[in-house]
Image (tube, rainbow, N blue to C red; front, side, top):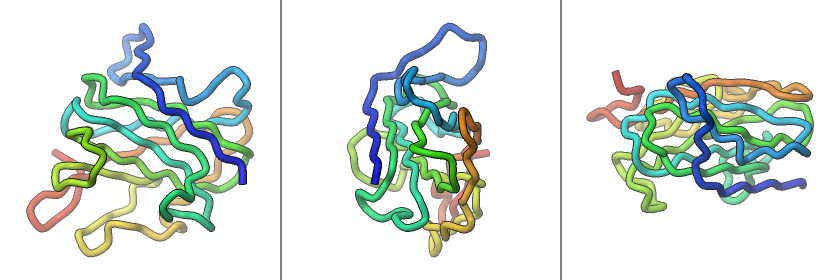
Length: 157
């Protein structure tokens, strides 16, 4: 299985867009990529991680195909570029480690491609609920981050 990993510092490009754009996960030699627009970050602190999965390894530890992680960078929305090995159907998982301690805490958030509805009883959706077709070249998707709200899970409002 082809694996990519990009651990990079935040790279803020001069743009009037409200989101921080980080293209460090992709290089000029990356023929296929997905730009993931992450919205609804509760805080501009911590770290944001995007992982690309195929159906066989979906959400299994260490089975991601590509992974990009950057510091929060002081913004409430971030756009990350993730390399894709070949066109196909993938699932994307996003995690906001709000305090950047590398552990899952009650204040951390997460989301998935296609923004499936989550609950405290069902924090991990099925692959079919998040599967997105990624074409040759550059694809774009948006992911809304969810956080705990008492006994519920959802975006901050």
